[in-house]
Amino acid sequence: MPQKDIPSFSQLGPSRVHRLVQYAFLLFFIYAGVRFYFYAMWALGETQSFVSRPASVEAFLPIGALMSFKRLILTGRFDPVHPAGLTIFLMAMITALLFRKGFCGHLCPVGALSGLLHRLGRLLGIVRPLPRWAALVLTVPKYLLLAFFVKIVLLDMSVPALEAFSRTGYYRVADTKMLLFFLSASPTLLLILGALALGSLLVPGFWCRGFCPYGALLGIVALFSPTAVRRDPETCISCGRCDRACPSGIRVQTKKCVSGPECVGCGECLGACPVPNCLSLRLGWGRAARKAPWGLWAAGCLCTVFLLYFWAAASGHWNNNVPPDVVRAEHREIRSLQHP
Image (cartoon, rainbow, N blue to C red; front, side, top):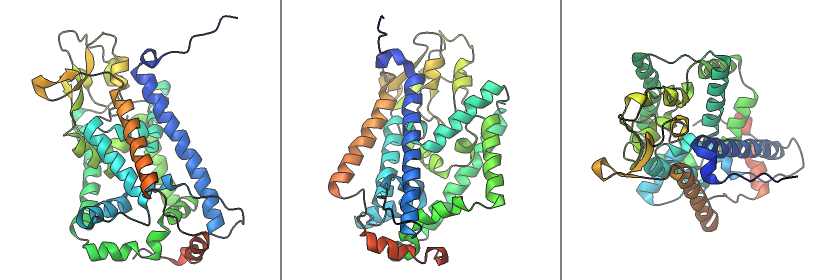
């Protein structure tokens, strides 16, 4: 039987590469979540079968990472309790600066789920593009949430307060507390999650565009990125395919340069455009910008993540290395621990 050739990277195209990377990281985080569940059950004494703790779950502690980042800047000390959380925060910041919001577009599992719901909504024919005024209003809540966290963490908390909080039992078991919160979800939480899922079916990027403060921060950082999608108005046929493909609901066909804070650097618009070179990835600013390979965003994000991971693992900034007996002792009173 004739063998089928394996498609090369360039033959896959921007959309397929984006989704391949995105779904691979989604599967990884599902694996890490399942592993963390069994670790937590051991730590809580529910089972005697020990499972090592996957440090990558600290990606779901962004507020703790923001506190750790402030302490790192002011004192030069890396967080010893949740070091992977701070490392992942640095990954996200660097990818935003260099490759727009590439962390959101390629690596975030919530972004991947949002994209799946968006595509399901398109398949069902229920996606509703928002009017321009409504799209602007939708972005407001995430900036209000970001402002709130910036105030309480970056402005109000002193270094001694940060140090004191990092030594509390609550902070040391914050990841397990988060797991228990979702495992015992209240009707209110389920209602909120259901509303967000429904919103994501109807409106592209509903959660990411409207309510993610992490995405709001990365969007501000991405404003300084040297990479952006540029459109050639002379060759554009105004087919609207780029608009429909964009998971952030950006009206690509009306812009010369897609450089706003909502672009997640996914390249879906590049893959959807039927006119060669009408949309292209550019590196640089203004007239100095030059055409770059469309795979720069995905490859750049992956290189940033793996380089920082290997640095963190080699330098002791990934695992907290807490002895098993200490872990179990810290988890004995976890259900009675309250936020300081």
